[in-house]
Image (cartoon, rainbow, N blue to C red; front, side, top):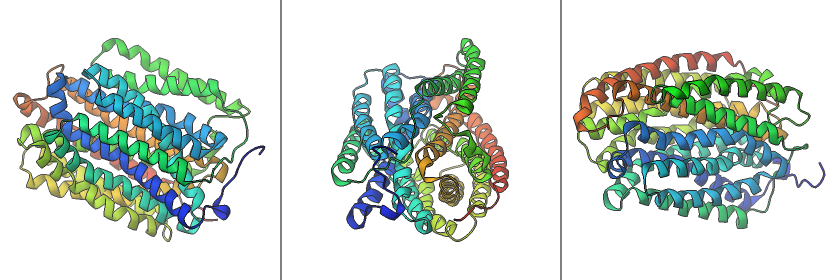
Length: 468
């Protein structure tokens, strides 16, 4: 491996530097969900100020996910080739600039565009953070470390609604993006100056043609699905996107230095763990967005009060995720993760009943149940995926799992967008349309619960995780 400075578990940063790696990865893991959940609370206010329709509001969230998912795999491969730390630092600084652009956006369409750029920059960190972390920790402590990092994700989800409600109510929704810019810059600076190790463990050339084909095809696929009902002319993009992805896979099968090594999917643990992640996030990501609208539009809560209600779900996830990661170092991850999927499905069924009628107190218990299921699923599933790939593929493995997560999240918003297009059309979400929102949410939560049932089957099908 000419010119590659390799750091592996046996030559990992020791002492303070290793702790700094864990801290910085945890903070970066905290940032994106904190910003996203804060923005969920700000959506009604943002929509009123910018005059955005329900479909446009969905795109403000969806553009970020489409971009992140589309660029993850190329950046994961790039990180394996040129260095994970280098890619991580570049991504944090780019995310800071994009966040500043979001804060300055003059209109809803402009915000959608800058959110796409923000999502693309976030893909740098998504593709490298977990890969850097598992390059540092020994295999026997991998689940514990991943549990801490995943717990930081859920801590972000816990704090985000409260901070978002406070900032929106007292400083305005733009303050959310200004805070994101400051934290992104601090993390990038910390990794640049405080961590000297580098992780570059793959040979070969970067498949630029494959990266372009993948990025354009995946972005087109999700955009066409999101616009299926809102823009009838967008439907012709769907077969074009599918054809592009098929050609990408054909190229990867014969490329001397593929962007994605298809042999990874011959491992059932890797394959089914990724499928389970895709389905789980498709069934859960839209929950906070829909419940936030329900609390504020149907029940009349303010942004700050709605934020306090929404924190119940991620608070449970924050507590259970490190514990579930520790357990997955000792028990089969598929059993822990599958139990979590079942709990999530039960919580979603309960939320469908709440959407059809009920006050704030009836919202909390189902959110706690969904949170418990989520906390039990994520860390063990991540442990299974990353334990199924070789060290040289950590970047691609992490990027693949993150892609499944983000594609699942985007798919969740596609479901929401289709339901909103069906029930609302171009009508804004407001108190005047509260009854319509209730009907839409009821259908959405039942669909999400059914998806979780399929995800449980995929989780169980992965088999035992090989332990080296």
